[in-house]
Length: 108
Length: 468
Image (tube, rainbow over the protein chains, first blue to last red):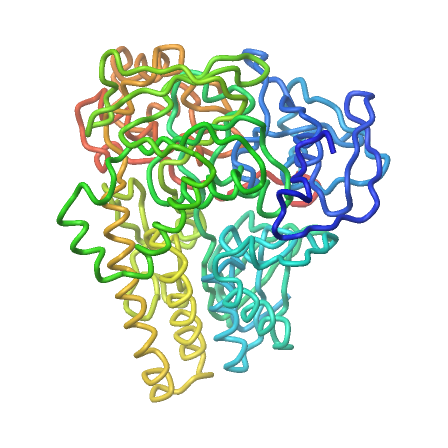
């Protein structure tokens, strides 16, 4: 596998995933496995920038990884402010970079 | 919905609390923000993954598995996963403790006679130039990726922080196939302090655990560099390189002690911050701990806070590790059950005796580590006027400096209202420590005097539609 998923050769836990599916990120197909978060699937594909900031337009990505920092916000199926680290990846999900924060529409 | 006891958090403390109250015959609502119970320490693989040997990902798998089984078996425990608390209050009446929740099916209320708060802690990151570049993440984020998602955060990784948590994560990354360039531990090695070394002798199992990690890192040729920290990161869309600085005991960089390392990922963690917003909302009294760098809810020997019926357990009482959390969880559960008449006094005393012993023994170990690996003030010399301090509102060190020196802000509250730091969606969780420390330094006052952000009634963002 040419992605950042732990390869079976380096996995003493012997994790086996079910059949993969695709979601799209900025129109590009991304492979994901059942049980993965959007953040993990994007990280595995080498994508690190999930949004740009409101004031300075700076790129941001995963930071705390546990739903606290709200840095990994993405637009998922049209809904902004979704935390990549907690949102489960689903088949045919349409994921987009979030270019600024819609603060009045915060999602879970 | 109603329960006799509400438990918030399904990590080691919350799980052992839920088991104790559940086995005492109470109806329990166990609220947890994540898809599967376990918290950060007992974090599970997703249910969809199959693993031949999941136990290798965990340190104390048997303890975790036992707790998961017991919680599942007790029919009076209602597990509310994927559910966050956005407000908490005490009302009048029979079940006064009210939690306002948002879960998979929308918003609802959970009312209980007593509540046990075990919301845990999160990594403390310290600001430095470039800490907002994608590819810089907390040590905990890296651990979550490898432990629960089996995805590496990057190819070439440097870790920087203070405390023993760096070691298992570096081991996990190296074993999973990442190139761990170095582990930078800001503090000198434990064995360089004879006093701490002698005290450590009371905890031989913990010494062996540490030695085990160091041996594994040696096997993977991962250098552990003491008295070093990543003080700058370059890159725009992703990390390109990191500056590893030799730092003194005060954490001020030593001139000429800089080394540039080519990495795509930087993991940082300087201890932990307690998730203490719910204890604030319930009106519990807190004590500021200058060594821990945070306010912790005051509690008695029965784990009851200063508010009757509000019990606390685990990291929010002081960040002293999972063994303390497990013991406190059981004590708080038994005490909560006793408070509503489900456990008798004699039974309580008998059960709590040995738990208290474990708790005090492990607490002493936790105290030792927290004190030894405490953040030193010199980190404040890593930041420049352009360095982002509040990640959400993009408030720089220059703006914080202005608020204190030009606008004469004398406390964190004023700095917040001038600069907007701490007003973003993380609600100050990520910058609280830094803003308190910087405000104290700039104004010449103590951290306790300048204070910190106070939790507002809505403790996490929630769609307006769900609140109404």
